[in-house]
Length: 193
Ligand SMILES: CC(C)(COP(=O)(O)OP(=O)(O)OC[C@H]1O[C@@H](n2cnc3c(N)ncnc32)[C@H](O)[C@@H]1OP(=O)(O)O)[C@@H](O)C(=O)NCCC(=O)NCCS
Image (cartoon, rainbow, N blue to C red):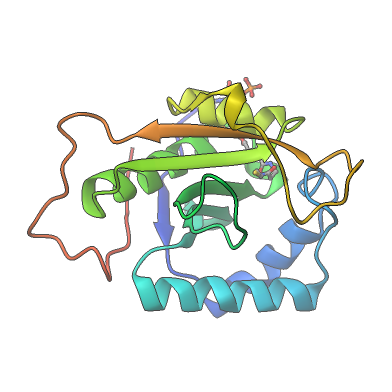
């Protein structure tokens, strides 16, 4: 079967229905405190869009063969921990797009943007310890976990099954220097594989 064309882009009004459906799916949101209501999804989409507009990067829309597959990209955690401030890489796909390597390709694009265009020295990624699909993806991308970095998510109460989190890190590969001629601020990564 042909591999889908995967790209990252800014959000559009037309993404709202698919975005709401993804965030309302209990299976997709299994490792989050709860699924999102349509109005929570609309607020989130507006925030993601504004962040990309302002900084030139963020959590982009993932398109696979022209259809909205989910979100992937870069973010600055809004909570304080011993590993913040930092830039994290994250992902969430609609269920029908799982198991096809789409998340991995989208994450590679976001990772290249972070290292090659923004010139970041390190990316982190974190998730609930029980989120094995997400951890598999981190490992596939070459992120490594130091159990000493494990932490309890400060926004979740003690005893909550999602509270224990694992942290993975990846340093910029040697030789991957930022391209000086590129503007890091307004660039959106695109890719075909
Ligand atoms: C985490 C998530 C994005 C991973 O999606 P995914 O589709 O499993 O990830 P990948 O793109 O790496 O695909 C890997 C799977 O596709 C399969 N695959 C098929 N074709 C492939 C290809 N060409 N290249 C790579 N993998 C391919 C792999 O074998 C693998 O299957 P396996 O997990 O059964 O071994 C997805 O589970 C998700 O959206 N979860 C809910 C949201 C969430 O928890 N986000 C993280 C919060 S921190």
